[in-house]
Image (cartoon, one colour):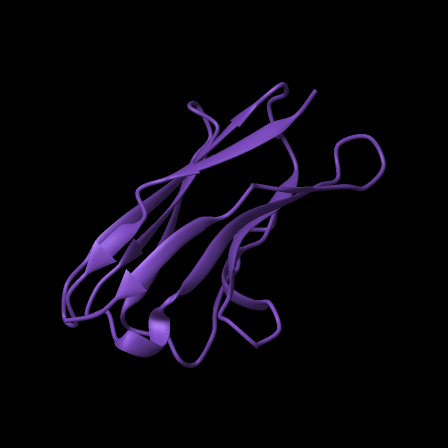
Length: 118
């Protein structure tokens, strides 16, 4: 059974940094899109950063230049480095993997809270 577990969230002051990590267990992803999404209270879930199976990077306009997505194939991890955090970055962040290995399978983590506040 595939599981995605996020870690690294918490409370940070505006201008601070956090690094989220997503550990995948149950399989090794050979061909997959990996990304981070977020959902703020009262808003729809939105994509924050995406690393496609072809190596293309995509970021939401609101986080460009501040957030960076990393992938470690050997450890089956995908991290999100978040710098210069703003109060509007406050949300529950979700790791998402779309695996194309055998058909198409979509996996979500349980979500982790990030709060940016002074």
